[in-house]
Amino acid sequence: MAGLKNGLACKARTFEVFDRYEERPGKGNLYLTVLTLSLVKMASDSKVHSFEEVATHNKTKDCWLVISGKVYDVTPFMEDHPGGDEVLLSATGKDATNDFEDVGHSDSARETMGKYYIGEIDPSTVPLKRTYIPPQQAAYNQDKTPEFVIKILQFIVPLLILGLAFAVRQYTKKD
Ligand code: HEM
Image (cartoon, rainbow, N blue to C red; front, side):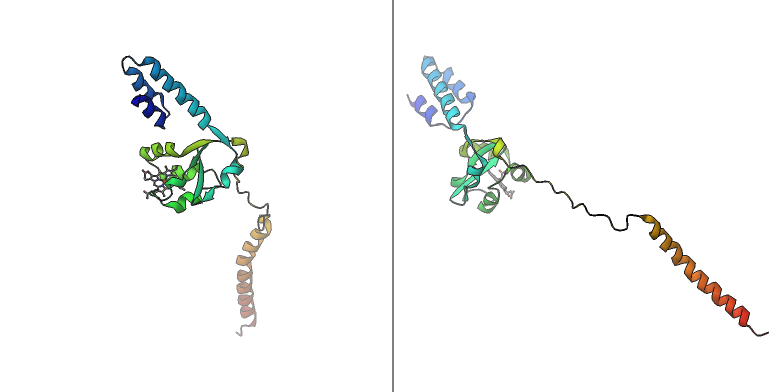
């Protein structure tokens, strides 16, 4: 009976845990029941939340996160999160998958997540990521011809002035 109690209290959602129960001699039927109950629990846990609903849980005392399509209620973890509660708050109201992955969380952090899992996000309700589209502005001086002419003139004009000065000097030179 103690095994059954533990099985029900346990939040683990893997078959591995229940395989161990099956190995116990003489209690095959009992442990099969535990497995079934667990599956029912899994199904009921997988509540589908809309993004709009999840986004309203954006406070220190009520904080939900969306990571890899799953919804986590991390309210009880706010004070204990090694990265602090501020980062968790800043990850609300959006898909926090990248924020979570960018930190390079350890395997044990990923296991901890399971404790706070409350369901799935309805993907159709997640707003599309906005991509930055630069304004359609004409590039300055797109036509290169005048620029080219200006550059040539920059060389020719001083040369012309020099040549003119030299000619004037030669012309006005007294023998
Ligand atoms: C359910 C969600 C989360 C859980 C269970 C979790 C758990 C943890 C744990 C256990 C650590 C200690 C280091 C490690 O073991 O990797 C950690 C560190 C950290 N986490 Fe999270 N975390 C979660 C979500 C997030 C999110 C969404 C962000 C970013 C917005 C974040 C940012 C950080 C930062 C900045 C650190 C500190 C890293 C360092 O200083 O080395 N975490 N987290």
